[in-house]
Image (cartoon, rainbow, N blue to C red; front, side, top):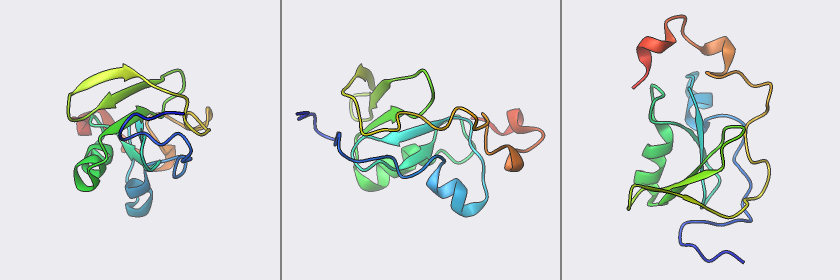
Length: 115
């Protein structure tokens, strides 16, 4: 059983896209998963940076990539990447989901909106 603070291996992801971007009609570049509550938020290169905003507002200290082929974790307090435990599936967004996404909402000049 995992005992790393900020990680709950039994919590599934909140969905397949950034919670706040989905609600507001926004878009994202890459997705991150809160390792404590499963919240899916957009990365710091995305226009809205919801994953980091979630970590700051909740105090949840660890995220994991929600991108196919990536299994890294990041600890906000130490600013360090690390290998962590398997989390409740799915481990990434659907393979047919566009990056950036969702395709129907991505700005034509999307690269100019990245951080």
